[in-house]
Structures are given as C-alpha cells and as structure tokens.
Image 1 (cartoon, helix red, strand yellow):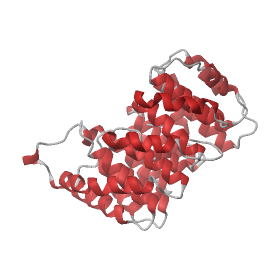
Image 2 (cartoon, one colour; image 1 turned 135 degrees about the horizontal axis):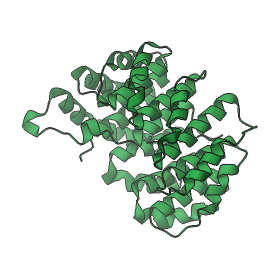
Image 3 (cartoon, one colour; image 1 turned 180 degrees about the vertical axis):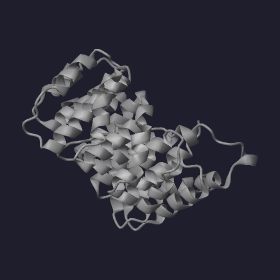
Image 4 (cartoon, one colour; image 1 turned 180 degrees about the horizontal axis):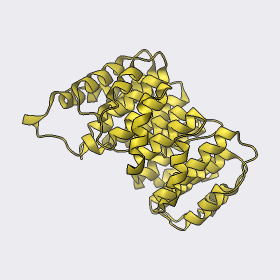
Length: 341
C-alpha cells in the first residue's frame, strides 16, 4: 500500500506490486479528497464511497491485528486515510515484533509528523535491522528532533540493494537538498549483489528521490524504467510518473492501457487518473475481476479516483473479496478518497 515511501524493499518485505499498494496509500487523492461537493449536490458515486467509509475503517482495524505481518504493515499505511484514529495503530506498530511493521510505523510517524510519537521512536535507533534504524532517524528528523542522520547517508554506499533502496527513499522525503549529490553518486555505483531487476528498481527509486528533492534531471531515468524488460520495474516506474504528475509521459502511458500484463494496464490507468484522465476505467474493472489477488488489490487502490458510479460500486464490492489483502486495498482507496480536506 503509499507516496512512496512506500518502498520497503527489504529481504523481509513485500513484492513490487505490494510496493505499488504502499505508494498509492501514502498519497492523498486530491481529485476526490479536496473537492467534496456540498451535501445537497453530492453525486451518487460519492455517496456510495462515503457510505462505505465505516466498513473500510473496520477492515483496517481488523487487519492491524492480522497474523500476517505484511497485512499489519499495509493496515498502517491504509490508516493514513483515517488520521484521527491513527495514533494508537502507530503505537501498536512500534511495539510489533516484526521489523517491517516497525519500519512502516516509523515512516508513518515521519510522513505525518506525529510529534507526540517521537519519544517512542528513539529506542528503535538501536534496532538490529538497518532499515528500521534508518526509519527511526527519518521519523525523528521529520518531527523536529535532533538526530544524527549521517548513518542514513552512509547506507547509500551499502552493498545490499535493499539497504540502499530504503536509504534513498527516506532521504528523498527529508527535504534536504544536500542529499542530491549523494543520491546521484549512488545512481552511478554498481550493485554486484543485486539481480538485474533489483538493480533497476533501486535506480529508479533513487531517481524518484532526486526528483522529489527538486532536481528534475532524474526524470528521464524513471521514464526509461516505464519501458524496462522487467514488468515489476515498469509497474513501479509508471506509478511513480503518475505520482510525480509527469505530463511528458501522458501519451506513452495512455498507450500502455492496451499493453499486457494487466498489472501494467492498471498502473497506467492509475497514473492517468491522477492527471484527471479516466479512460483507464475498463482496465481497472478488468483488474477487479482478475483471478490474481494482486491485480484486484492494485485496481482497488485506483478505482476511487474515478468519479463514476461504476468505479465506486466496484471498489465497494471489493470490500467483500475473499482475500484480505484485496479487502484492505479497497479500504485504503476508499479512506483516501473520502478523507475530508
């Protein structure tokens, strides 16, 4: 399920499609969330989503206690759409025995600047997992605490692609432009322990971090990723380009609506929806009916972005899917879409 941040690419963490889920959950959905109509003119599709909000909240609360650590982490990401109730869930995440859940809780604290949670974050600076340490530095820094982030910058030179990936993602959200040169240096560094696909994923994550810090020169690396030989790289790159509102790639992304596999078509539909273009709805509907739970989950995130009765009815129906990850994805999309400005 997140804007990014989203990329918990570790040995302990999720697949690229779940990274996409994180990416979507961590982004606000301005098309819906900041343009709610007055009650007397609220369209039927919006009423349908609003009516499903409590059921979506219930799903997030249930998944936060799942036996599956990835679902607990995804529930934390989905909870960004229920800010008034997120603090107890973040506390639960910090106390979780799984490092990925702890990581997600810490990134949530930093992302939302939950300053009251900063003291509880400090103990995880001593975690035995480097990516948890990095997230603790990020959380404390974003909450205005004095913390030495030099170890986080040093992680950019780590030979483990997962450590590099997390460090780049976090630095890209710290609003510190001094990290740009370090990130560019990382983009040129070899990663002998990574597969070709892992190498490509880390490099576009680094490029995204550079762009988020204000240097658009790295956009071309993400654009190239949209045409990678690896499907997971293409999905992630297209999602990033949608998040970054890259106008230059709109035509190319629109062309991907007819390009299998379905995960790429869904990513293209989502990227276009962020630009206010909704011709990808058929791909999202197809994805919602797929036998692949990952495709249904991916579609569930993007469907609420489309102001359409069919889209709203479809995502609400996914709250009753047989797979919990799909139900949680639908909940995340609905919560973001109905988040009051």
